[in-house]
Image (cartoon, rainbow, N blue to C red):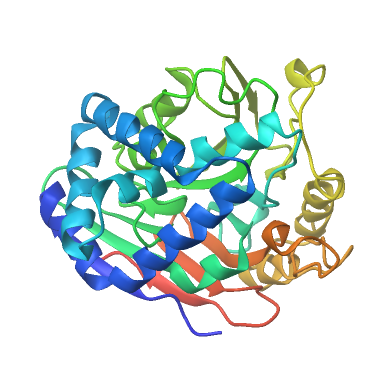
Length: 359
């Protein structure tokens, strides 16, 4: 599979959004179509999606006006209705509320953080395999963001979505994510969206300000965030709609998959994939080596096939409904010391990593 396309975004919010939209109009339209089908499959008809999206867009003007302006710029540049672009940017909230109502599991992702005491080059890393709808692999992009105000950052996102799910900024702040689901998801749907919070993490100049978007206000849906810093710190934040839990690295290693690990959440009736129970533990064992961990060790661990197809390196399970099939769409390793991303498009066993750096 080919490398991810990259776009350089400069100027104010509207200009950056317009450049994004002009660069990927077909991929954005494909994403709108893919998600409308997925929403329908999960019980959310198109008219309801658009009503929700319009409400989210209106509220984004208050939550983060710069994000809303960039979203509108994407719509103008791609010539796609801004309500459809808003639906992409709030798609996490739409889908995960539906998952909760259906007693369904979430997508499978496996993330990690490594502190300098464990790595051969004394660098800090965060990263993950991001597992999701196979068709989305064709519409993933790398954004190089050089704003008029705020830190420069690199990120991986879906065409049409302003906030990157995985990335690193010029101050060494890095982000990886995992899906989590509980029955409380969607009870209060109109709260600051997941993707807006991700953008705010990567727009932070200090570590405390990177954590604030994740802990300061209630969430609409559950999610997990691994936030690291190039100076040798990492924290895992498990967020349910009205509760936050924290995990820290043990012996310099932290891993996570798609179920709650903090003891405060263990009594919750969470929804989880069975394979989540072994993926994070296995990744930890693969990364906790007797010698210092190299970048080659990280790549090998992310390509692990124990339990295939439901493995760390996930492959399509042909036995499940086509709308429920997932795979590793992208593998990302963020070097927070170097401020760079190593990215493999598709399952990492099938492709090589390419390095992206900030100027």
